[in-house]
Length: 349
Image (tube, rainbow, N blue to C red; front, side):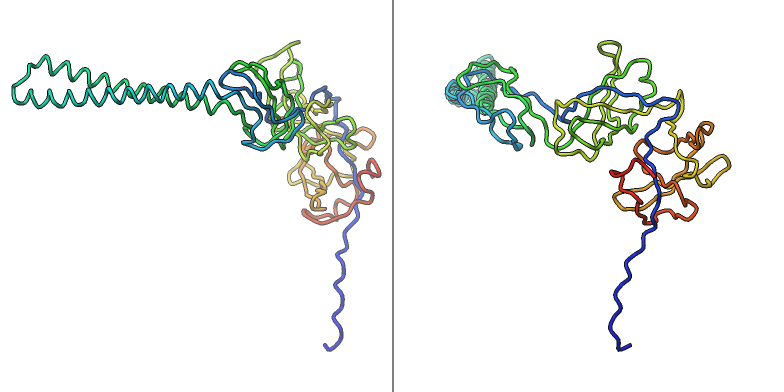
């Protein structure tokens, strides 16, 4: 009891042999060429026309929401505000006079000192003057709004993808001046032929290969177009997961999409040694490795074809999953393990 504390024994992690799921059973892995896009992108323009006095950003600049991008010559709109202000003051003066006449005729009518027709005229004049003031207020608000719109700001954080304007150029309302890509998410846009679009579903996993990026990028189908475009192909978008910082909009990409058989799930070849007993007859299980937590998770699979060179086609796993291939009867759901070889050093063990 008086001795020194013994040091904690480090946790011993069970080593496992493994394989990466890459082979789609039945040749159902389809590859599509695509282009990387920003998940959110917008074309920016002024809501009013005029002469551009300042352009404060360049193509490729990072901008934040509310940052000023360009400014029009404000003088014509300042003069419009002044004119609308003067019209409002004049309308208010007429309203004051009309109100005075109306109130006077109202008193005289109560005393039977004025005819009903004269009172009616005074009342109509008062109502018309009130409407004139309302119209003048609206025109002044529109003039002020137009003046505010001589300054173009970024709607969200992002990057200027294109700058299509220079200073001292006359532009029209709605003319595209900038394209801005939102910071953060990226997606890949592909075109899927009509012959296989029925096999593509939202959330379907895929892998994306981008030039000069060593590792494939995980992706999932996020949008499926309802109308075919050129060549009877449907637009499909895939959201990229764990995006490397080197991937930028406009890059070419190759998408590997595992398509299911007709009315079925996608099936993949895995070693027979990776399959353990399942919960039900005709069912098996595999242990899928999670790199984030260094743990394995028991996943149920269903055989979907005959054996081929000690490989069996199963459904229930996904493209890119790391599956334990030996000693599966000694593994537990959620158990921490270590791979015998890092995934980057060997294609599978």
